[in-house]
Length: 92
Image (cartoon, rainbow, N blue to C red; front, side, top):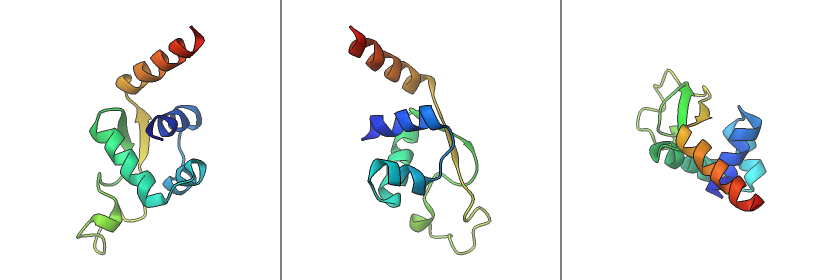
């Protein structure tokens, strides 16, 4: 599912976490956790916006200035290499 999420980000660019969750058939919270994990592992990088912690888990969510603002992710070189290797191995 993580690789599928990377492929969606690679092909579609910016999407809301709700839309990503819908496309994955997963909950929004699970999708946000996967985005956070892919970011932590260096496969995605946050380009714009808010915090690295989903609002639901933040103790400051009621006073947050970023609340409700979207984060935008981009593929890192690490994920671009991974996806390129997968495509190459599939075509061999």
